[in-house]
Image (cartoon, rainbow, N blue to C red; front, side):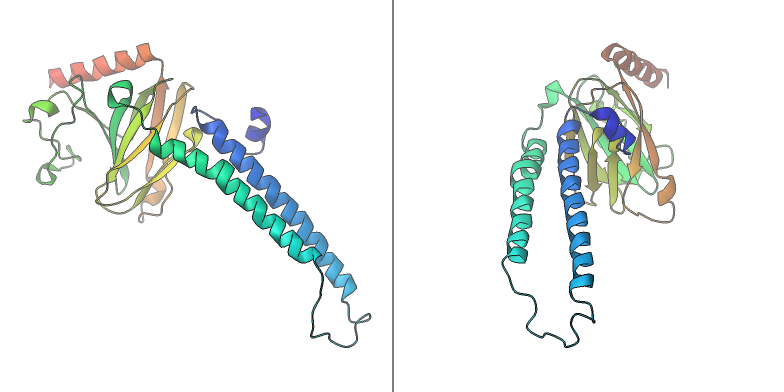
Length: 251
């Protein structure tokens, strides 16, 4: 029940794969509840069973029996089931079935202390060349506008705009330290590691405004490394792209 999960503190589910992630979280928490109640009851039992009045002399042989061993085996079996039949299949879908570039919205997201830089390839579908020597306050990605592929590239800071119901392929990287790209409503969380280009994909299925959080401590300004995601209808997204392209032409 989505309303119950939201009542219990889960963010709104805004991506196609979110129910799979939520199902795993629910099962894990049920297991945690069983363990909490079980170990709590066992603790109370031990306090009474092995109180000093009933056991004036210490027993150095310890408790014997098959129940504790069977319970431990049962817990291990349940954890294996969670891993093999829930966690690994959900993870495998995210790392082995990337959408083709021509069927997805492809963007670059580059973290830095303390902002998210976003680059769209423009109408030609090609990312323009970047050069660290060109990086400046007004060009944080170091985009080389003399490169023909870069002339139509759209760049934003802390604002990611996406169309609904279409695969999104994010090429995630960082300019400095490790950051973590967190889209909680999309159930996406991936570290951005220096020197690596890490692909992340998802399908947003709900329009609206959401947040990008850096969920990895990255410095004194970590608290303000906050971005925003606008998920629009395809028509509104196309209109946004056209507006941004027009602004490029006007420069």
